[in-house]
Image (cartoon, rainbow, N blue to C red; front, side):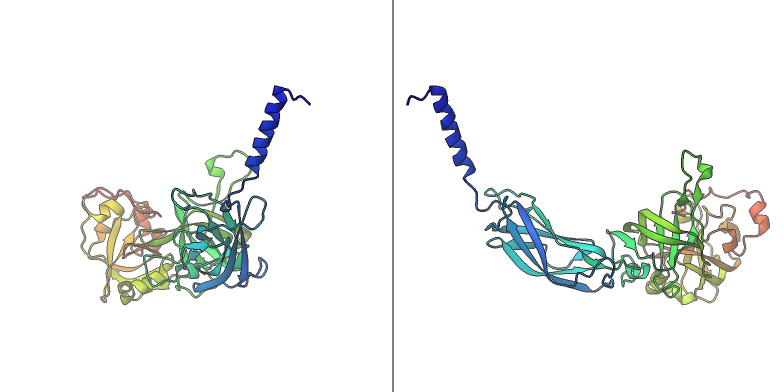
Length: 391
């Protein structure tokens, strides 16, 4: 039989195409299958308790080809966990397509997963495929505020750098105070002043809810002290050594307002201890029997730049600072140098080891009288402070 030239070309092309698809590289990786061999995964309904201790699970990773069949892959995989910190090596080596071993985590919470990724390759011979395999969820309770805050380093916290979801739904977490750029929250189910408070940075005054539709700013409903939170989460960071959640997501139990706790009394020596003050960070405190020492309030001073002015106990102890220019703008501490200050109270914040009390309003400064609130500001020897932190 005579074959036409066109048909000959078609048959040749078909033969070449078949030979190409028949070739499979033994080290081609298409999928990674991750299995939990040993470790209590619990469930969303019955999660394991949150702990700041290490947790170890045994995992098995298997390489699969594009047909989902075992592949004799050999190569290095990167290891990650989310959320929490990885305590073991961040690389494992697959031999004949399999790796099995222990992975140790710290601070896992909520649904925690371990990731394996082909992200290194082998230099010129094999490029990374970025194929990724993920374990099933390991379920842990969410951390309380105290579990996030309790650390020996007053300039750190356990989940710094994580998007942190706080355990709130079954606890009495309430708004302690509201400022122009955020709110302070406290967990009433933990002992007062035991790492159980935190600042939530909302950039503007925190909103509770906004009526549906287009409304003016005046119609926005703002959060208020005592409101109980149903959920709370945000980016966890140390701002000038003070723990805060930024870009937060939060919600409240409708109509549930609880009593804001009284301020915790400070002793003179408390201000000398970073450990004691770290426990109180973000909380409401009261210091009594004080005086305002002489301090610099000119253009080059911390008072002029940040609104911070010193306070001392009459019976000794360490100097601390107050910052009131944003929330009590009619109070001029330089007018009261050397005077007795019966008490000052407010929220505790830190700036790299400098402990500062932020009064919520004029009632938190004992010598800020009613007449001072309504009087015209007196003539000042220096300009008013230019910046007053994040109240």
